[in-house]
Image 1 (tube, rainbow, N blue to C red):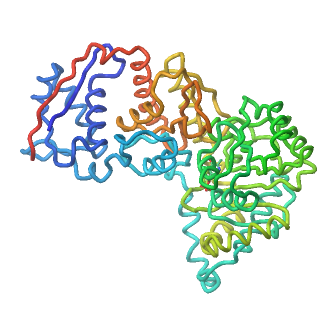
Image 2 (cartoon, protein in one colour; image 1 turned 90 degrees about the vertical axis):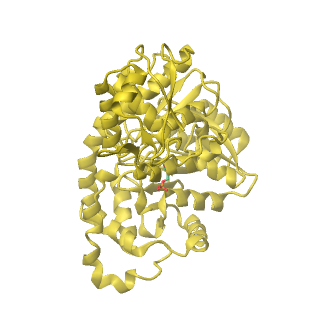
Image 3 (cartoon, helix red, strand yellow; image 1 turned 45 degrees about the horizontal axis):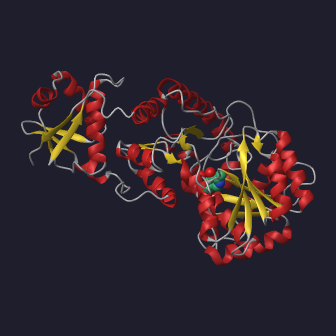
Amino acid sequence: MSLYLQITRKNNLAIYRQVAEQIRAQINTGRLPSGTRLPTVRSLSAELGVTPLTVHNAYNELQADGLIESVVGRGTYVSDEAQRDAMPVDTDQPFHPDNILGDILHIMRARHVRSMAVAIPDPDLAPIDEIWGRVNQLRSEWINLSGYGEIEGDGKLRAALTLWLEDRGVKAAPSRVLVTNGAMQALNIVTRALTKPGDSVLTEEPTFLGYRHLLKTQRIRPLTVPVLPDGPDITRLEQILKSEKPRFYYTIPAFQNPTGVCFSAEKRQAILDLCRKYGTQIVEDDVYSDLYYDQPPPAAIAALPHSQHVIYLGGFSKTIMSGLRLGFIHASPPLMRKFVALRRVSDLSGAPMVQRLLAEFLNDGGFKRHMRRVRPIYQQRRNGMHDGLNRFMPSFVNWSRPTGGFCYWLDMPRIFAPGALYQLALENGIGIAAGEAFFTHDTQREHFRLSFGNLTTEAQQAGIEQLGRMIREQASKRPGADGQLKEIALTDR
Ligand SMILES: Cc1ncc(COP(=O)(O)O)c(C=O)c1O
C-alpha cells in the first residue's frame, strides 16, 4: 500500500494543509484503511523535502479531527474511528443526478466530510432541551399520546399551526390543517391527490431536487419556468399556463431552493393573478420563510386576497431540526378530505407525542425565541460564506448573496464533466450538491449549491478554499503545477 502526496509551492494553500488534506482525502475514500501506519515525521519530511514541523502540523490537524492517532513508541496510524466514518458514497460509481439525493443524506452523517451539500440547520443550535425536556410534563397525557394519533394530526398542534398561519396573514382554521411527516410527505400527498401518471406539473427551473425526484418516480411530466433574481419569468409562466394546462404550479417563493431567490411582492401577486386567470392550482412551499437575515419576505401567496384555493405547505426541518419530521398542509375542505384519505393509507398517523411537543413549543413562544436566537448566527454564516467565496473563488464563478434560507447557488462555464466536481470534492472530504440534480434538462453552464446552515464560518472557508483550488486547477489545466507526485510505500501495523 502506498501514500500519494504532491506538494506545490505555487499553491496558495500552506504546505502543511496540502499534506493534511491529501492524507484526509485518501482516508475518506478508504484508500488508507484503519490501522495503516503512516511514515514518521522525520521520514516523511525528508521524502517531501519539507521541514519536520510541516509534517508535524499536518499530523496534528488530522489527529485533532480523529482521523489518525499516535501510539507512543509505535508510530502514527489511521484511527478506527476514521474507518467508521469513511466515505459513505462510492465515488467510483458512474455519476447520475438521481443518486444525489441519497448521497447527500449519507454525506450529512459522515463526520469527516465538510458537508455543504444539505440545506439543514446546525444540530448544535437545535432547541433540544426546550423541546425534549417537556416529555415529563406530558406524563398525565401519556395514555392519549401513546397510541395512534388523529389522522389529521394532534388537535393542539393544529390549533397552534392555525395561529402560526394567521400570524403570517393566512386565513386559517384547524379543520384545514393536516400535519405530515415533514414537508416531503406533504408534497407526496398533494401530488398523488392532484395528478395521475402522464400529467404535467409546473415547477421552477432549477427546483428542490427532492421534488424533481418525486415527479420522476410518479411519472409526472415536469414543465419548467426559469427563476430570475426576483422570481419566475412571468412571460414564460403565462405561456405555459395558457398552452400546457399543468395540473398545478409548485412554487417556493421564499428563499427558493436551490437559488436562494426571494420572490418580490409583485411577482407573488402576478403568480396568483395568472394562476387564477388560467384556473391553475398553486402549491406554495414556504419552508424557508422564517429564515430571513435582512428583512422578512413579502406576504405569502396564500396570504394575498382571493388566495383561498392556494395549497400552502410548511415545515420545521429548516428552522428547528429535520429529525422532528414535522410539516403540514393548509388547504380548502374538499381538498383536505382527499389529502386525509391518502395520509391514512400512507402511514396511519404521525407520532402524537412529537406533535404535542411541537405544539407546546409553539404555544409558549419557544419557536419565536429560538428564531430570534439563531437568525443572527445564520446571518453571520451567510456573510462568512460570501466573504469566503469572494476570497477563494476564481473570477469566472458567479453567485449572489441570498437574503434568507441556507443556499448559495453558484454558476460558471462548464469546465468539468457532469458530476466531476462533485465527485472530486467528495474525494477531498467536501460535500457539495451537484447542480445537475436540480434541473430537468442538461444545461450549458455548470452549477452547484453550497449550504451554510450547518457549518461554522471557519469550516466553510476551509472547504471553499479547497474548492476554489480544484476549480482553478481544472480551469488552467496545470497538471499538478510544479509539484511532483510522490509515492510513499507504507508498512502494515
Ligand atoms: C423547498 C423544500 N421543500 C421541502 C423540503 C423537505 O422538507 P422536510 O424535511 O420537512 O420533509 C425541503 C428540504 O430540503 C425543501 O428544501
